Length: 228
Image (tube, rainbow, N blue to C red; front, side, top):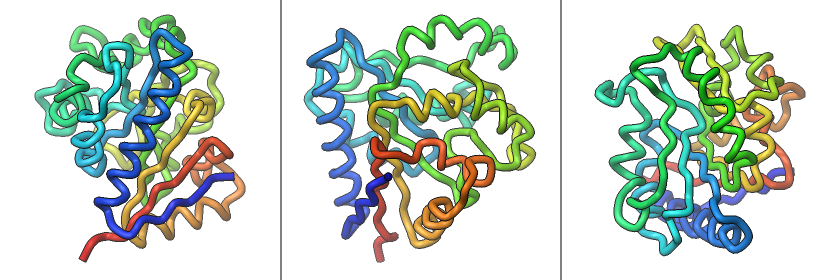
């Protein structure tokens, strides 16, 4: 089952996560021409990105993709892609390839249908970094999404969801894709997130706690309390 790694400070967590992800990518690059790194959106991982981009890796052979994206242009403040560009596609990582989940000339459903073949060429994901909400969602696998059951069970790599709690449609990596990642890290901060994680551990279904779809021996949970 998952390994919960508690850190004494957020800074220690961020450095530990950056070092661990870089080590896993480095190991994968020994055996493959290209490797894939999936990262979360939101503001929490930005300091982690600031550290990871400075790691010494052959970034030109690393393909970066988001675990999910709001289907909005990069000019929109809610775009995860622009955050990744500003914080991760910098320094040593400037030569990495970023796979976008938005096309202004397509609807979200058209985009997913058009990109199935391309996405399948980079599966399975070598290293996946995920966040988790207080509702125990991860990526855009939300408990209040009418599409959740299909997004968890589909064999397709991408799925469109329209959670009731969210203002726009989202494209998410499917539950099966996330579950099949070679290495998975869950980044959570604060007592509330730790309580949500413990609750997810006690739930029996990914429909109630979608984060459970990535639970397993390949998963490490990196936690620190909010610094005083």
